[in-house]
Length: 314
Image 1 (spheres, rainbow, N blue to C red):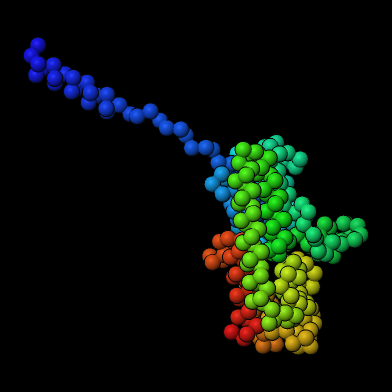
Image 2 (spheres, rainbow, N blue to C red; image 1 turned 90 degrees about the vertical axis):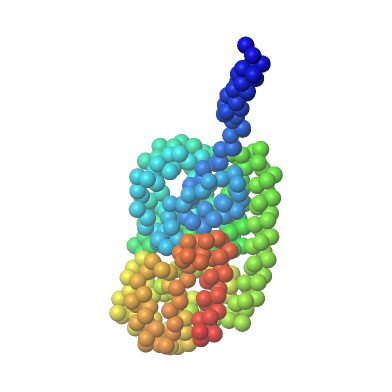
């Protein structure tokens, strides 16, 4: 065998060796699969979980969180989830229980390591007294307190702490990184709140009308004054007689702003506006309600900017 033939054979062998696929590198770490009831909770979970989580929200911000269709596709998401986070206080009573039952995932049921009730330790407003059955007859009353607590950014820090605790239970090795994310989130909220309070300060105490009783925490934090609701009782459509009463209140209290969520009909609000000269302002009740509202801080940037513009007469 000539030297040239030997060289050709050797080069051919080396080519085959080089052409073999390289050994696979280490697989990326599996992300924790988190499912939330609301987009607000999902937004905060992403802030705290960072690169370690994959988050899906069942309800979208443009939907009424009281009424969500429990689709089979949501059950599949919950079946594969490592963690489930809900707002609680009866807000999702009509759709979360059937979804959890259908998912058959014991790791995310109440009492399990993968279950988080975001309302834990949150100071609540409008906690009624009396028999829950009697309270239900008064409309869409929540027997544990008003559940729209995420609309106060300082209470949002408590939500973040609850989510941190849940994530740290399932990822103890990432606890320090999660803690850094939590601390950064809290500092951002504190800085933003100082800015937001200053922004709304010239209009503190202004009277407004709301369609539904979604805003007591927002009202308390930012100093507006909701003097009446378009709904005569929570969840009950307004009657002509009730609207006449609201018009009287608006004229008597010099109300020039009506706030409404995007999933409610504007018909009654626009009627009131036409009779009183007020402006109808659509606010975001949740992250995702409008394209501009993609993060938890976006929620307050958006709502306060719209309110200030309305108070200025813009």
